[in-house]
Image 1 (spheres, one colour):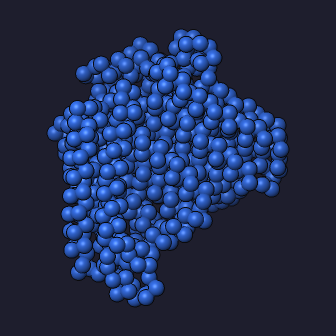
Image 2 (cartoon, helix red, strand yellow):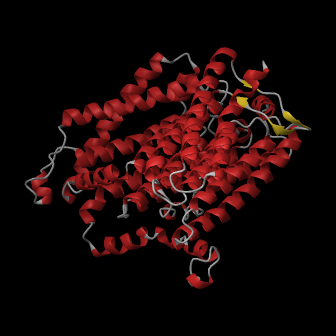
Image 3 (cartoon, one colour):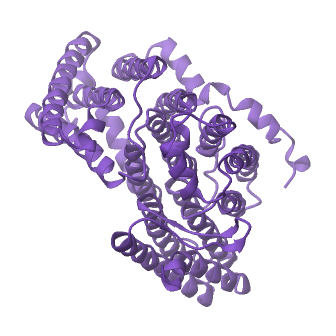
Length: 546
C-alpha cells in the first residue's frame, strides 16, 4: 500500500480539524473565514470518504501502517463497515455544516459553534476508521467531550446544562466500560490491531481467558453509549441545544454504541451471553421508547424518544446476531433522523397527520376483526415472499442468513408493524369513527396490500443484500441455542403485546385509567428521577454548577 493511499482516510478528519482551528481564530458573528473553511472541509471530507470507497473496491479491506510505536498511535482500518460509516458521517456532516451557516446567522458566537461542530465531526471520523484499540478509546472519549461543548453552547439555558451534565455522567461510565473491555482484549490477543483481533476471534470456537468479560463490557459500553434503558434519560432532554446539534447527535453520534457492537461482532460471538444482554436490554428499550413516544406533545421530544426506540431496536438486531441488518438500519435511521430534525416544521405537520390518521381507529368491537384480518394478510405475504427470496438465494450465505431463526423472529416483529399499519389505515367508516365528515379517507385495501407486500419484500431483500455486502467483515447469525431461542420468543411476544396495545389505545384514550397511565408514561415512568438527582437537576439555580 502506497503512503498516499495509507493516509487518504486521515484527510477527512484533518480537514475538519483545520477548519476548527480557523474557527477558533474567528469566533464572532458571521465569521467569513470560519464559515468558508468549514464548508470546504466538509466537502473535502466527503470526497475523501468516496475515494476510500473506491480504494476498498480496488484493493479490498486493508489496515494502514501505524503512525506511532508499541501499538500506540494512529492507524486506519478500511473495510465495508468503516467506509460505510465514514461516508455516512461525512454526508450528514456536510449537510449539518451547510444548514448551520444559515441557522446561526447573526449569532454572536457563530464561529465558536462552527469550530466545535468541525471538531466533533473529526473525532467521530477518527472513531469509525480506527485501526487499533488505543485510537478507538481516545476517539471514543474525544467524541463525547467535543459533543459536550456543543450541548452547553447556550450555557445560560439551565435545562441544556442539566441534560449535558447527565450525558457527561453516562459518557464517563461508557468510557470506563470501553477501557475495561479493550485492556483484557488487547492482552488476550497480544496486539492493539483491530483487524488482527477480529481475524483471530473469527477463527476461534470458544472465548479465551478474559475475552468473555471483555465481550460483556463491550455490550454494556454499547448500551450506555446508545442511551439504552436505564441510561436513556438525557437524550430526550437535549432539546435546548441548536437544531444542528440535535441532528448531528441523533443522526450520528448516538450510533457510536451500535457501531462498537458491530465492529466487535466476532468478539461478541465468542460469548453468547453478551449477545443475549444486548437483545434483552435493547428490545426492552425499543418497546419502552415506542410507548413513551406516543404520549409526547413536542415534536422534537417525540423524535428523541423515537431515537431511543430505534437505538434499542438496532441493539436488539445486534443481540440476535443480525449485524449486517443492524448496519443497514443504522444508516437508514441516521439519514431519516437528520432530515427529520433539520425540517422540524415539516415533521410537525407529518406527526399531526399521523396522529389524525390514528384517530380513525375502528370502534372497540371491530378491533379484533381488523387486527385478525391484518395479521392474516401480513403473515401470508411474509411467508410468500420468504419462500420466493429463499428460493432465489437458497445456495448462498445470504439465503442461509435470511432463513435463520433470528431473521424469522425479526420478520415476525415486522409483521406486527404491518398489522398496526393495516388496522389504522385500512377500510373503515371515518365519519362514524370521528364524527368528522371532512376526515381524511382511508387508503383502499388493494393499495394497503401492495404497500405491505413491498415492505415485506424490501425487508427480506435488504437483509440478503446486507449479508452479501458485509460478508467477510461481519459474521453470519450464530446457531440458536436454548437461551437464544428463549430471548427471541420473549422479543416476539413482547412486540406482539405492544402492537395490540397500540391498536386498542385510540379507542380507550378517553378512559380515566388510560389518562392516568398516560401521565406516568409521558414522564418515562420516572426512572429518570435518580439520574436527575445525580446531575443536580433539583438544585436551586443559584447553587447549581455550570
